[in-house]
Image (cartoon, rainbow, N blue to C red; front, side, top):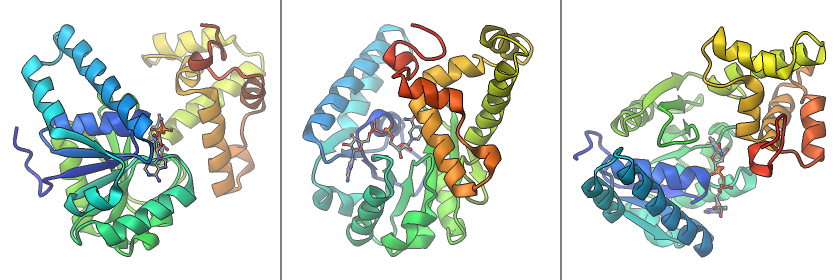
Length: 288
Ligand SMILES: NC(=O)c1ccc[n+]([C@@H]2O[C@H](COP(=O)([O-])OP(=O)(O)OC[C@H]3O[C@@H](n4cnc5c(N)ncnc54)[C@H](O)[C@@H]3O)[C@@H](O)[C@H]2O)c1
């Protein structure tokens, strides 16, 4: 497949949950894609997991074996940013959610990537304005925010900061479309962008209804599914996302807005302190 964008080579930084899937998505769309991570071990795990993922897709008839083979042939893995960044037209940074780490990566990318390259961050809570200056090319920086699981979720939020150029926005939107995604444009950086704000509003109301004794969490979840056709209820969704992540997002939002209405929820924080993080720890709001 020949992608119809000015992008010829993709670089994904960070081979974790998101970076590895973003890289596979790009390779499945026909882009030669490099995944870079500081951890060799993480790269090995990511390569094995992506093989496993495409094997399952082939076995279930969702992907032709030939397409899987072509995608893997387009993927490569490296720990050496100096070596791989000079070939990239479009970089998606999906490294650990820490500003100091991301700033250092954008500073290096600014020096190493070709002058025309677009530098995007997949961060959920750090707006690209926080790293744009370090890159030395702020006009070519934006958030390109994918959703987990990347291979399944269609939405990609393209978030511009005040200095993002229109050309960068247009290329980012076209690139996301070429991955088979349905990008949306967020015109200014607000904590949580749009999707997490909508989700947060539903969560906040669900927590207030539970705390007020209005309905049980099972019945609140059932209402979301049977009256609103949500695929899962807010408590089930929090367990899926991870209560530590829910709590972290609330803390980051609260720190950014200072609005008491955005303060982290005490019952979520208590579950996190008890080690109940949701599905991944075997218990959260529900037991698994
Ligand atoms: N997990 C989600 O559901 C989700 C959804 C949307 C966006 N995001 C965002 O995606 C980003 C990554 O999240 P994740 O869940 O994949 O994290 P993760 O912890 O699974 O992976 C992060 C990876 O970054 C690597 N890394 C750390 N420092 C690095 C550096 N200097 N250079 C290269 N690699 C480095 C780590 O070794 C690790 O493999 C975060 O910014 C997060 O906000 C996450």
